[in-house]
Image (cartoon, rainbow, N blue to C red; front, side, top):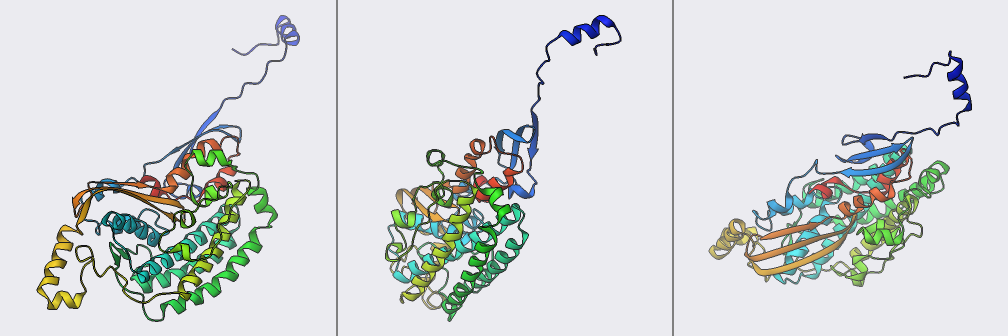
Length: 411
């Protein structure tokens, strides 16, 4: 009941009393799951003290499809299109990481041309993913022009992907033991032409954002992830390197012939949103550098394992003219590539971080168990620690700098 100060005794009591401290009540709100800054169907359950974040709980699962369980009911090649839907901004790299895991289980040795094709498309996927990531990040922090510039270059890459694979978005280009087809005539020249055009665009984005006062205010010192915190939460890729940890699977555990190429691993110092942006800008330059080296030393020969008859389907002309090849193709399609029993784990350096596949095989053409280690899931796990103490407006900058994709988180 309110105090009535018309009574003299109440007014005197109020005047003599010590002023009570104001008690503020925390505000609980949901950000998402349908929100432009969450980059997908992610819901953040926030607890706010004014405009300061006191607690942040990511709520995931809105996109769950059960990919890992689906894999147990499919042949190894049939699961390739499902890997497209993990990090759907770099499907070519997902295909390759999965195929390499299965091929390690089968103890296959890929021919040099197949390795070169895979390394090339992985670096092109990295450029494509970072172009979109940096462009959307600029839009998140108020720089719409950046998105238009980077998205235009990404479309040029998608034209090259379509020419190579027949698809722009969900490519499904890789097969266990090789690729679905060889590269088209003149395609490498068109990739080099793209490289010549994309470097000035990266420089332009660098000029527009890197010293922009508004962008600096939105990103410097915001969302700092110390080195020990990044390691403890399993961060990988650009998010880990921005915190000062120089870990890159292409250097530390080379695959696809990366040991023969010369490239640098960009590393940050502060681990804030600004460092994560800078690392991705430089990674695009290094990927272009790698693409040029791969094309300069591009080998000839087969683009699939010719001696792995139980794994890779024969050529179409052989299927139509030879009974043995026809039967072999029928068995691979219906029962799947025959794998030995055993367990294998392989991880590749994807644009979002380290993408790993654990496969438990009991023999035959279908995996007994398959587990996916998704980098975006680990990137989101650090959010409850990083978001606390930030302003609500900073959440858009923090989320964009982590560059996750919900297709990987929910799987």
